[in-house]
Amino acid sequence: MSLAFPNSSLCSLPKPTSDHTPLLLNISTTIPKSNVFRFENAWLKHRDFLPTVLPAWSDGLSQDAAGSLARSLKAVRCAAKVWARGKRAPPALIQNCKFVIYLFDVLEEERSLSAGERTLRLQCQDRLALALRERAAYWKQRGKQHAVCEGDANTQFFHAHASQSPAPEPDPGS
Image (tube, rainbow, N blue to C red; front, side, top):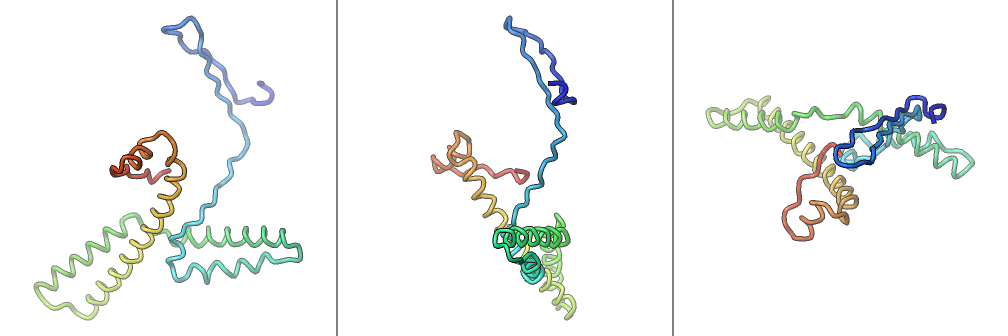
């Protein structure tokens, strides 16, 4: 085993209640983990997503149908990753938009807003609406995955759905 997995270790653990000795085996390999690509439905809410990504589809076309499909999918995946990296919204975007809108609402109670202030408030309202649609699409997609993964298992999520009580919030990290 030491030749096949050189970074592995085997050690015995204490046996407080039994005469059996538990063993702890740590196996480490150099097999690289693949990066999972996950298409986000929220990307379709952006006006510039499809015009940016679709040209990559025709880059992979060739005579072989299966090879053409594989190359086109890889090209679109690569283009989508590049696009998504540049479009990540800052984490505080929704809170900041709400704050600016609230600020202008308070100012408007005291005085009339200038044309620039009204324009900025309208832009914040539009960006907030887009961010909320993206978040809804994201959680709708994640909710389906969560239901598929844990909907039939003996989990708190399953029991909440079976008893019609409110389900626990899904973990955003999973």
